[in-house]
Image (tube, rainbow, N blue to C red):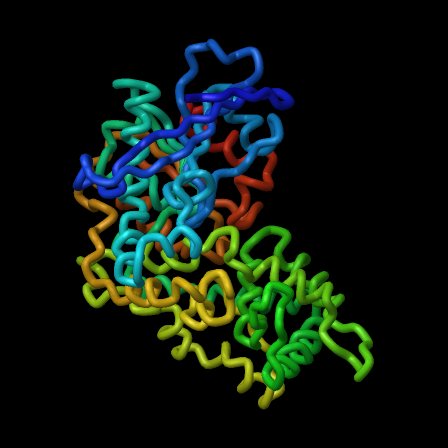
Length: 436
């Protein structure tokens, strides 16, 4: 049953679909997949084309609109938008420590979670399209991981797509997880250098906090553990447009005078917890490396690639940096096995995550031959200084997808779609229409 709501400038309608957990066994277990339809006020009955939005992640639910703002402002001029909570997120049969406990032991949990990658998300989308639009094709907008999903869509079900927009999400078609992280760590070094050039006082501020945590890890308000490595992982922020400033202001309030002298403040610990906790999106941690898993590329599995590859970049060792007097470097979009010890919301699913990391039979997500023969119009924004997605990989993929056109820009970081006020999407629509 669908329910509608009115918000400033928009009308939203809730949809819940019963879809197969395993698309290879369509008569087997079913899960609920939720999507929110959004249309401009006054256009509810217009025959508008559908635009499916695929959120970044993995493990990220679609945004919750409060009105006609952000990129929706531009999209609703032309489309009826569908904001999909990808399976396991938001209202789509959420997968977390609470719900996964009902599946049984670690093996049962891992087998269940193996059905939550891009290929399953795309097959969900195709079943939903047929229910909402019949035989009519729809458009898709994929942000970040949503762009990865869009490439999978073009590989396995291009007949469902009229056109595709991708922002910051052109994945390397043949890049292994190790390839991804070997390219990522040097980019993260560059983001650290930019941050310290912008806020030179943070060099000593970070060293002071790191030295304290190296000796005495702090307990976060939720019971999590702030180790020096966890502190370094706050560098995930450095890939967003405002991330460097946000990190700096967090560091500014790190210390308070306590009874026994300086100690890390509750303000800082709460702020760190807000950035580090996976309570709202555990699938990001559990499935992150699996988004690169393809048996023809990674026959040995991803095997905690970010952690293994980190050893090739000793400049990220905080204790060595403290001993040598070098700046302590933050890490970036990397998931490490120790996170399943320090985060209370991840601890119960640590064994399942280990099993997924060891998995060697991941299906391939992209079909290079089919992409080379692609007939769906595709335009993509590639952020030149993107910390999360390698620009070289993106451009190589752009050349491998027939007819794909790119807009390369350094005006925004990876979150350009969200923060540009519709400018990124407006440019891509203009490209699609041949106006630029």
